[in-house]
Length: 173
Image (cartoon, rainbow, N blue to C red; front, side, top):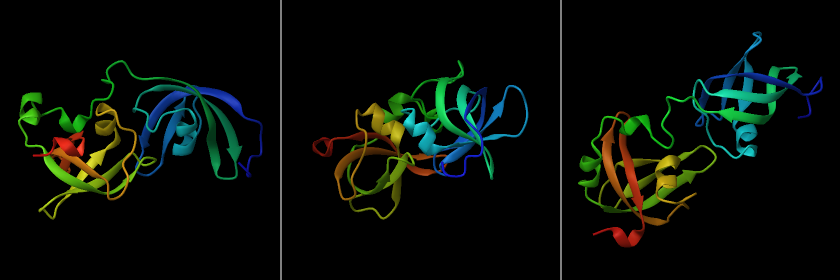
């Protein structure tokens, strides 16, 4: 960081919120004081693309002309009440209901691994289907390329049409 004015110091705290779409969030220090900016790049350097609200976190903090910022992550302890790799968007769906949804051929419109999401289009339909990185991880995938052919199970979620499962192209009927 070019605007550092002090040496990084370790600070423990709790994640106030983090939005992978916006690429940042904030930490509340255990010792109080102003919120600490947590940028997505700092989190990615630690090997994560997101962090749950309420997670205990230790970061090195620098004071910049724009306020306190995390320069690197030392450790993260996820809150015990958060199920790993479970999206709240699917909480109200019965897994059997998702499994009963037809597998449809689709093409990736775009996917931004850094943001943690993208969109695909099912062949013959005009609506975009939201694809979250956690759905990819459950499929054993890390990224999608624009124009890539995939198969998916799409459900109507709280925020619109979303992929509940991503499968290899050959899985489509």
